[in-house]
Length: 496
Image (tube, rainbow, N blue to C red; front, side):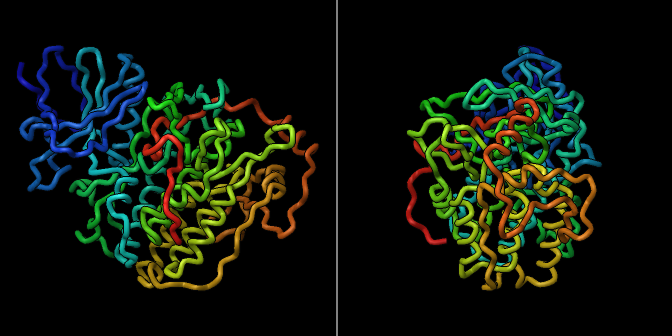
């Protein structure tokens, strides 16, 4: 049979079982396939698509004839489940919703009762990008590109968070520690949530498609130079997080679970989750981004080691969560707090001789508005976009804001258990404070120097009156990093 020609973007094709596909296997040249993955729900592989059998040429440079695509194949043959996931990509890819920082669906097809998604093939993911550029130049050019990407990711996440799902989330996920169900927070059932923000799910494309370039304009440098450096795009925002697909974490072949490094505390505390789940994960990613800018890739590995603690799942191994669960003498969970290693690392970034006003602002944003134990205290994506765009305006007005060392002392952040527990007793406010934050009118956690002491009996009463145990938990299924069984892996003592 004649191989099909994929024409319309996001069009679906039903192919005869004997159809010859226009895909050419990659040469065995030792090139790592960053897009290749396999899980219980789907697998992803990379191939070249023949240039005469598609109409997606704008995704590649005119001189580039090596058109690689990533093909996601679903293991099940359920049309309804496939159509749900496809509808997400189609809706988010429509012109009024289009964001250059969301990965784009090219087409879908059914072959031999299996459903497939075709995406552009990324050059690498963000972790690999950091690894391939281990010592970035601390210049206005590098910092401005990084800031634009962080702002773009926040804008794309805001698009996801404002997506109205077609099927309310039922969210029957499970934790690593047991068959515990996690409900979606009331009022959040109809909105999108990514649920797995991490460097591996941020892809780097060297080339920005021509038809997307108009969406990236808006700064006063909106010319071709604006696209130098490529673009970061969020991927893996499909069925699981939007429609509550049951998502059990698979055990890795080496017998070690993939560590959910970027999960927020509400998962371990078995509380209802919401879109604010993603804001914690994004804060973790931004803190690693700041680390890379100041001290390079090895420092990201050192940061992992610096915050490592014995795993609550198996003390034989260590994990590198950004928080720790606080238990009483009987082992009963009473809350959580940001790990001392994270607080100390943030202070090290502030104290770094190269630290600029921008890096100070970025680290402050992460520690004061994103890495907060109580989800309701975290900044929401619209206000996060405003804050990051404020940083961009400062950078455009004065490039020194990005890279000129700023040695002004920063207040050391210290969060005790009593402070964390005290904030859990504060009622959430539906009305905004008139002047609480420059661009965030939500209620802020208490900043009193002597937080109110909360007795264990008060805490017990609080947790006893909590809503039903959470159901909608989405766990990471990929190792991060996947270099060793015990992790974080050993790394040299690196000064940050």
